[in-house]
Image (cartoon, rainbow, N blue to C red; front, side, top):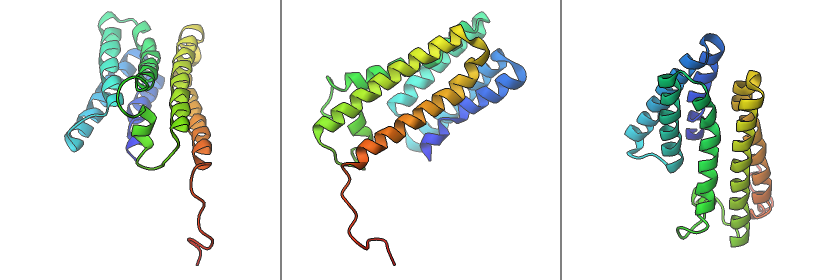
Length: 182
């Protein structure tokens, strides 16, 4: 459920962009992101690293967009966030005792070390490519940029997660015959 909360600022941005334009949408993004992560911090006493990245990048690039009245800055937000996440996943190969993907999913599934490594690297490539795609669309196809940012990125992420689930499913123990049947 908590993962779906992360889409509230994106929806606020989309709706405001479609009705009022880029600068009010940027304000809505800043306010909704700050409110959401403030709520999560209050509720849980901490923010996850990806939330900290999103919050800081939103405040910096959104703030620059509004202060300088230049939409270029907000167009850089999605690529920067995606590339920061790619670096986070990549960095976990060199820092810490577990890969980022294992930290996120290790409580739910047990996988061989080589599978964790492959999955983690695939997230690196995914986030790097998604950042590049967002950047390309923002500056080469500005008329569809917001739609791509919302629906394209979401669809690509959903498809990627399904592919990851297919990989994981090969390592899940088979259900015992008759388990769950009445």
